[in-house]
Image (cartoon, rainbow, N blue to C red):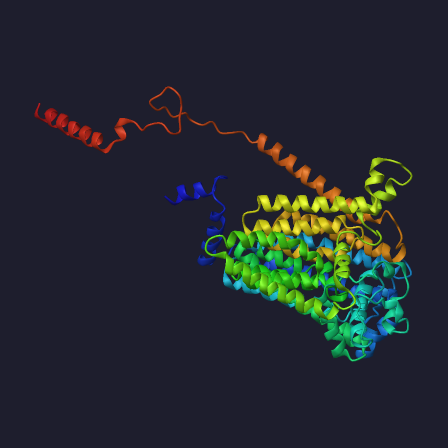
Length: 584
């Protein structure tokens, strides 16, 4: 009986719930396959290599960073000056520049994501409580160590680190100068130390328009009030905020993925917690995207437990922090409409609209004077059309067709490209609303929507990958994870060239176009290999079963001898025949 049940569950037509039931039964049995010690040793070795890579960034960022930015941090802890200088790494600086070495170190760190992926999948075999606790302790311990390493790291010199300085500057504009950062340019305060540290480079001028949400400006205001004119304390507060949200996202990923795909939980947490790009862009060069990713994970955690209104409020809060999350609102509204279909939804929708309106009014009210509806419309327009293109796919294609009066050059005009971007996003959103049924597929579609926006936007921002990374890891779609890993490698090349050639127009082809092209080839080759392998396997001949008709049928009528009544009659006749033979 058990053999037949296991055979049925091994068929390709078996439902997906059997995999979850097998995982739960193995968890209850507490069985442990061999090889746990080697997996733990490999995990600790990879964690140590990642920590060495992060420590190697200290002298590289120290030599490329601004002196004022380093002095703010060294004023808090004088011992950081000695920590920023490693003799082994500094001896390699005459051979290669600091930017090349930092790119090499981060590439090594990202290349370790592939063995981490494999180790996470292997960890799903060890389902007993002792093994699970061991995995959790190792992941958490190394995450705390790596996060602390990024808290005390130098600022570095890149547009990515300058973005954290801009966040601190907007808080100073509100507290110190009592102006609205949405309406007043930061160049008016040229004597401010943060403005001096930012400089007047072209990249800073491209990022001069405030595209942050009002809730993020409130957080920078709070950090400035705590710092009290000390810029170093304000930067430290931003990094500590990034560390807290980073650790909270790890906890949420563990619980969210554990309910959707428990066999994917260890791999998902490892790919986020031990990701060099998450550590660098989320803590070392803190961006608002890591806070938005944490808030979206909180919303998913609430929706998994039936708290739909609380999850909606956290989604709206994520929009107020990071404005591109507004693209996810139609997806979640459709999900709420399906969940609220049974029953009386009138009171529920009225409650959602009332609370949402209250949150929006309270968030935008302090910045509304002098800004108004025109400023809000301009802020929404900046989500789809940047003031100027830089390091994006459209700038790379424009450089490629420069001098050719073709139809492609006409489509790459800023206005037409913004329309193409809107049409592509609307089409993808419509397909998602049409096809998605469960929460996991909806989360995958939402992550792809943000990836599409990041790739089509005229100003490429590598930190925009943090939000879709968290969403796609929650769903556990491996091809999407592979695409994000390739885009992360491309974003490192953007970071490197921003140090040396910030105006290189073909950078978008290297940072965005090449990873997408490589991912497409990998998917095509893998699909072709599966098709060839499926045809190469010989099919077993199926024995034909004859029914009443002369054709074989799986639904044929059983033979008359299988009826219990006929079996009883035949057995009675057999006993009568034997008794006659005995008498003879």
